Length: 303
Image (cartoon, rainbow, N blue to C red; front, side):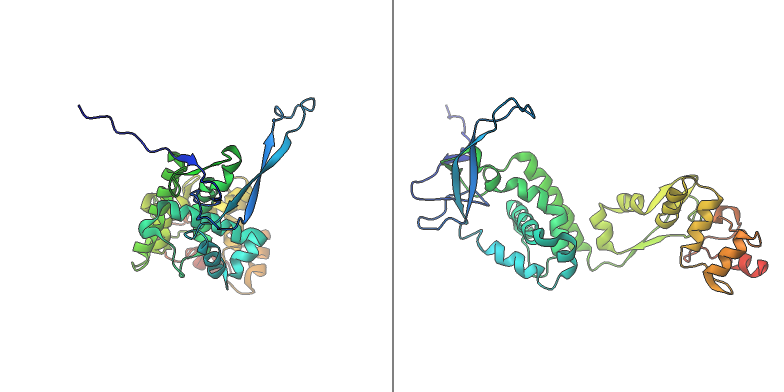
């Protein structure tokens, strides 16, 4: 009779004289200096009850970075070099967020390993949350004297599943990078009911990032009294309803409102009742690759 297979434990006792890796959780080689410490508290206040004593500091768990994880810090710095947009958007925590993201990538490994050409912002968007949940530093205080039996062995299954989903999206983006752009038509009607736009053009990589054709179409088209492209939908949101005010706002802010005297002259003509901004759905015109193409004749006729 064959003995039942046993699952290797995720955690094992930490070898004496070693520190656990702050990232992957495995024991670092003896002699690796500690690089960070995690406080351990004794006792815990129940909720926000002020009558309960606050937790007391019981000590610290010292952590290091193993040889496999140590290069990740320099890689994060290199990926952020020259990316002032990411640094400006995320501030001083940009590198920490990217290190978290690189940890998330390491959990799923394989073809998703980062390269010097990887986009740090995309990595952070997809992997930072799962990477932070995967790092041993977030669990060390609850397991003093222990470490992961293998790199990332402590990562819960649900976190791994989320990271695999993110890796799949990233891989799909890479595979789509060389494909031609995709035009996403509205769900019905042939054009945006307000401006008449017959399709939104996205790169194949962006369509993959959004989750495929159906998800991408849902992200650029909405339905409110008819199909609306994103700029027109935003105008409806600002106006509070899909009515004449929203139509006028969408037209004047579109960048396609043109006529003698420019946008200000058009606005005055609209306010004076000399010009009516028609939604495409009521114009009888064919849809167009240029928003508000049906208004050209209206402007010329009213002028």
